Length: 326
Image (cartoon, rainbow, N blue to C red; front, side):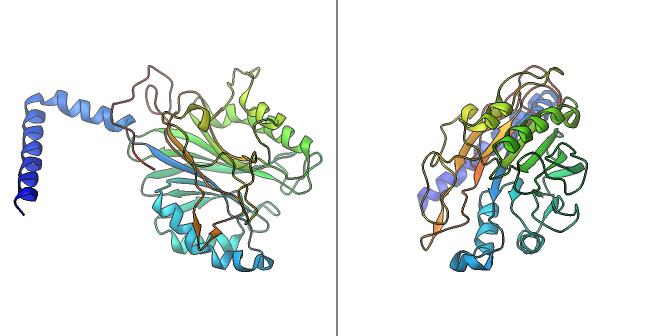
């Protein structure tokens, strides 16, 4: 018992010395603490294709997975979660299992509640939604229910402008789900989103999640991550490529409820310039041999406003020790 008491005394002594040092520093110490808090509180962002509620999935049907899906979101402390294939009833299930979370998004069929959502769930105790909207991935993006190019189904992108309650950072998050059949639809959807990002962000940082049904060799991936647009918009960056610490987990996100298939990384977290990615992982958790979904969730710990003032560009300020686990 003596050793724990010595450790306890040392810890309290360290706290006391730290407090005295802060008091001696006066305003300078408080300013340093405030500056560190303003940029040093990472957010955890997750992309998660939930697999729609299909009774034919048997043991993998949604009622058998919903508690575990909510549990993974809670355990990893994801503050912003872009979900795909979510039906209205599935979202209500998550509402009851994730107290403190709110969401934005509409059903892709009628712009209200019918069809799949590309909803954004968020921890309302940490972030605040200032504005949000949805557009359709088609030549007529503002027409509800419109289908684009060679797509088999109507597809959407949902966005939200968030404010971090801790840091004051404002940024825009986009969540989407590209078509699983049409190659042209995937490429054109990527181009459409790129063209819209500048107006949505208005100079703020950007993060994006989604099931893109395209791996990094697909032209749709290139349309998102290469080239500068005429309005000066820079390409997005794959969070896996710019993470500070090595990627964790497999390099594929598709499992079909069976086994992880190689070279099928089709779910992503993308970020704009200036967003610092501290950690990136693809989660391959199983319970009793069963996956959470036919897709694996992708998670990234990041600092959206890692440069300059919240929501604006400027010199890089990233305090040491700001990195934390998911």
